[in-house]
Image 1 (cartoon, rainbow, N blue to C red):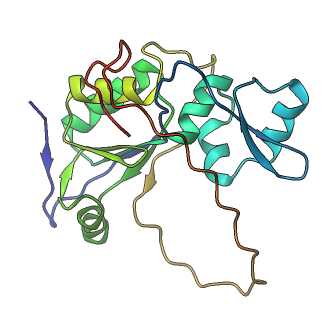
Image 2 (image 1 turned 180 degrees about the vertical axis):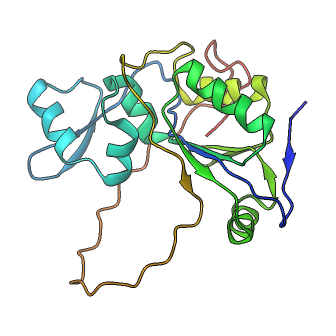
Length: 215
């Protein structure tokens, strides 16, 4: 049974998790490497110390925020399937959802929903105005369910137990809708390079993905 907190346009809400999140478990790992010129390659061989350093320096803003300070394998999962938690004020299911992610050691981002504008943004995102909402990559899990959330995190490739380094902290929760600021004049930016698509995850049941969840 999913636990859902219903949002009213007149009710203030808070909370979101970004989590960051998770790559499908595969029999043979695939490693993403970035050379000093910024060229991205994928290989089944673990990167050397020099290539690991280059990869860290060339990470995108999203990847760096999702993977800073994480073990290599967990960082790969978090970059491929980032986890985000959308939460609200006075929302008991949101607190339970946050506790699950923290206890399991899932790196995530949190977004808070508290204004009418943010409620409308949540409705556009998920076609509903209920919290909590969890996204794992492109997957959306509506309403808190310990069992279902755990199954999807397992299928994405996140470890079942906390493997975060000591002292690691997720970033502070941020509003779903950022306040508008006056645009500052800036030079036209070069188009961002498109990352290579991840290999398709198998939808066949496996020990780490008994539900056969496909991302």
